[in-house]
Length: 223
Image (cartoon, rainbow, N blue to C red; front, side):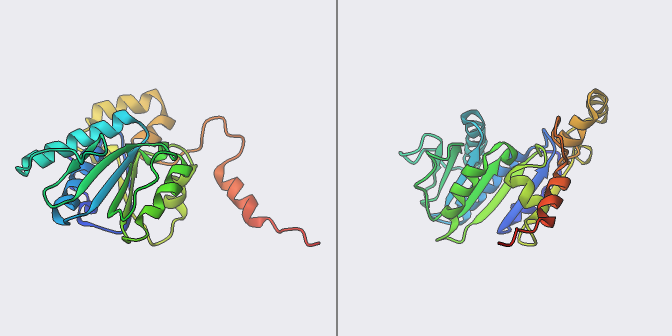
């Protein structure tokens, strides 16, 4: 992969990778998952995606890294999209469903791919899986407006989060000519998809800043 190796491969308890489309985050996520499973015996790594197709693509890349380690690829016998390591570690890919992802615990590494497309309900449902293990949490995505948990953690999550910005123009995999064509098609689309900006949603009557300020200035009525 031609893009620079991101810092988040080396650790961090809470992190957000805000990256351009086609930057290669799914490949890097698979590398991080395999590194965790290989280096920490008995660990459990979960990756949530908005769809089964995306979860399957993540597992395909994870299995390729496992093969490069000389390890025979096999599932855990319980989850369709999974890899079981000889040291007892597991990697499981899950499509989003707040009702179906319950039941996991003692998670060492929890990752959300395309986090801007995952619901707040699913995010809040999965966070408790890190409680007993004091596990790591990473969000990876291109922005999708000033809304949802990805935006809130990026903009207001505080110092607990390590924030990494990886834009299209900074990635050697993306040709300058192509990026110029994309910008000519839609400036707003380009800013969101390639410059990784949390732009206002189309058709919004009020900006998110105006809404936030209104609530900050609001004082409850005294009775």
